[in-house]
Image (cartoon, helix red, strand yellow):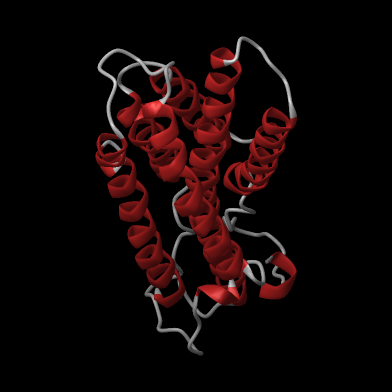
Length: 244
């Protein structure tokens, strides 16, 4: 990994650790917002370390109309929709069950109060998803760095890397929230029943580990989105398809 990848990894590690710590306290509504802030901070700092390829004089308009689908894995939209649906149907019930359980922290709250405490999570996740959508469109529609084959190849590589970085960030935030909620609930369920194990606990752990595998997939995409597309003077010129 390069330095930028380590910075993004640090953002996920610190955000995840802080989020899980806060999730086991009375400040549980801040868990996902803190996780989101640290992940986005890591991505932002890493992008300052990996600027767009240098331009060859003046930028030019795209030769053909493209969108984000040209730079992202096939079927990514459907996978994100399913992941968003899983978060939507899983996290609110878990919040209600945790808030209404006998193991709730001081200042127990009702089911309605649990839903209200989800507002920061909804604001941060929905806000980032809207921003990510605009970022993907701007990345795809931005002018080329130049018509020279070397710059075109680097430009396509940069677009693909930037688009996958946005996708990886979105997937990490959604799947991390889902996995964290499932693990927190399974932990409290285990404590509430004094370590009792059964099919209910087994099912919870299967769901939590499945969500973690999805998280690992997007984490890999976040850490290693692809080559930066840096242009070096005197390097061999290759077609865009070979570099991308």
